[in-house]
Image (cartoon, rainbow, N blue to C red; front, side):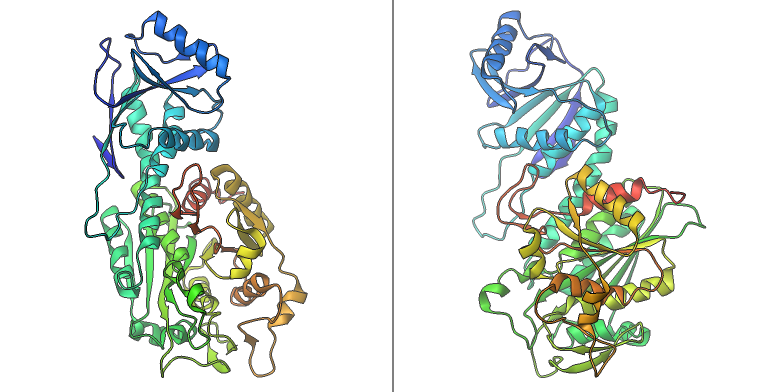
Length: 488
């Protein structure tokens, strides 16, 4: 028995006897509107003809629910399966959950023999079933849905699904973190959440403010100096590859709450700032998925956890601060704080880890939402090969990106007379100048910046994600890392 979200999933061999249960749905697959595939032995000819005829008459292209005297059947158009990771089939799984999401349907039986198809389908089904456990005192628990997967090949299907289930759990860990409000998830409690990854073999190192001062992460510490919450950096190391292989390094912005600092945000803009730690959440969920599946790569996740608050000790507009890289920064807007956190993390990682590549994720700029909405994340990269891999993997997994420029003319916009750079570029191109700022803290390492401001939180649901925290980026980076080839 596997439990995920409000699902209990079990795998069994197809029986010749029909299981008659209340509120049950039988999920069957229809090929080319002509024949039912993987059909159970108990299905009689009359009922089969009825389902095929009516499906063909309706020319169904999406899951369609038939209520008959012989029971309830959900007929699924069989898709072509050509890859171990199929976004189309994953999306189909999410649509299936939508069809039976009503609490009336409790017992769901899938009849399928295709190992790869079922894994993709169940991944989408489980991703869409996610629901955050809220804080209402009279919370009504959703009814548990009993999912039975019937197959002659059930043991292999269960084993294959376990791999995808671990990915789902990583996505859901990210979603849980993003949903939590700032009075519950602060830098310290976030770091404690990361300790849970130790049970999967991850080496978790937590650096407090004293450690960070000794290291010289002064830019990161400047962001948090106005908060009563102590800033932390968490380094999560998974050693799954060869000793001589450089680590693939993923960096996340973890501003657990962003008031804007002394450059205070308007009240309406502040409501959503509990999820300004979305980049750090993605990194954490990714490390869970990688470690659960024991991916044979060396991966390091680094997250900077701070709060950006206004008080008598907060940094001021006009302050000049140092960074780990040794470069000085004029802080003209304290609400452009995420880049100050990432700057120290990137330069520290490059110096101490000598990574194969670095990818950072951050809910960095509102300008990115204006540019790309909630469909794609912005991709900024100093290496064409890495950019191409990210783009292709994004299309494959549904975590889509769009490449943005890093021209020298944009970089000049963050020059200033009083320091090496300023933290904002003036009017226009806000997402680009933020990325240029980060680029100045990377020397020679292939690096990509993903601005995920628009895709971290959804106002409406998608095929595989409920509204709210999306878990964006876990699937993309998981596929990128597990398929990464050092020789290409």
